Length: 110
Image (cartoon, rainbow, N blue to C red; front, top):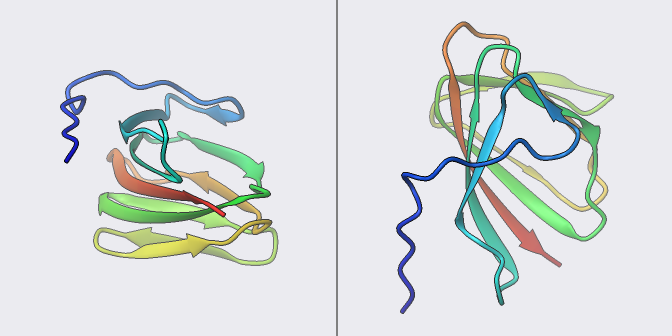
């Protein structure tokens, strides 16, 4: 068993992300093939179009709404909805709403 109590800490704005988006590792990769993060995006916060070569990511919207763009499709997810991006799936994110979006991001290394 392992317990993490970092939920009250302040995260970081990862490279190629913008607008005050803040990501906090709740369960870090450290010796594992997965990571769980809380991502908080204020209005205008998000991530530039990118892909990952060796990871899959699930974005679960805990509150608010987040717009995704794959270069071929654009869609907005709201509270309780989720999307899976497999390796090489491009994705861009932005919060176009007035309220903050809180997402749970689960990343799994292939």
